[in-house]
Every structure is written in C-alpha cells, then in structure tokens.
Length: 161
Image (cartoon, rainbow, N blue to C red; front, side, top):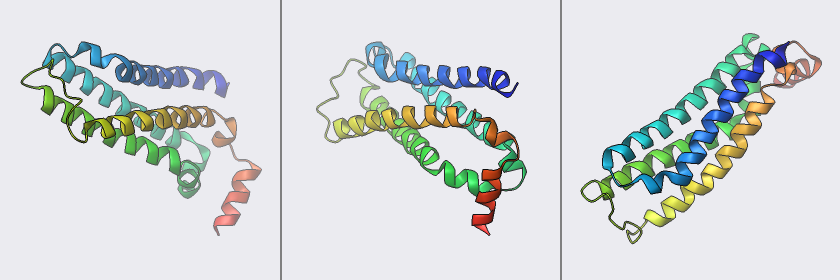
C-alpha cells in the first residue's frame, strides 16, 4: 500500500539524480556553444532544486511532521540537508565561474585559472556525497514507520521533553 504509493516518487528522485550525474559527467563535451552550456547548467541546478522540493514534500507527509515533531526530522536528516545545500552552492558557484571564463570563447582552455581546479574537485567530491546522502534519504523516507504512529516516535518525543 504505502510502498506502492512511494515507488513513483522514488523513481522520480532517482531520475533527478541521474540527470545530475549525467550533467556532471558529460557537460564538458557540450561546451561548443555558450547558450547550450548555460541551459544545461540551469537544468542541472533546477533538478537539484526539484530534488530538494521532493524531499521536503515527503517530510511534510510524514506522521512526525503532522504531529508537530519537526525537530525529530531535522535532527535525523540534518547532514543530508546540509550536504545538499552545500552541493547546490558549489554547483552554482562553479557554473557561474565557468560561464564567466568561457563566455567570450566557448572552447577556451580554462584549467590554468587559479582556483578553478580546486573548486571543480571540491564540487565533484561534494557531488558524490550528495548522491550518497540523497539516495539514502530517499530510501529512508520510504520507510512506513515515518507515516504512522509508532513506539520509536514516542520514545524520540519523550527524549525531547
């Protein structure tokens, strides 16, 4: 019942992750035209925003949130939320910098720019963390315990008092 209802949402989340992985892997090959590169960067950033919106919509549907125990959700998912926002910030920063460097010359060699390679490496490393934590969060939010009253929620509530 709940698992069947959650499956399309999980597939949507996986699809958004696959778009991001594809963009991070192959966008460099499509740099021959500035407008194409800009559109792809915007699509990648919008997919990250949609992924965050889907997670927060799932949060809002949980029994914990509806019972007013938002602190439990925040504490349980603090790291994945933080990693997602850090990754999004690094992504936007890298995209803006890359478009600034390439705007006049799309095929320009930009890898000799001071600071660009460290930002690129940090962004790609945070991408791996984002993929891991986002997938783990998506799978955790499929757990039926989040959508019904249970003993562990009562214990968590008692700890908070």
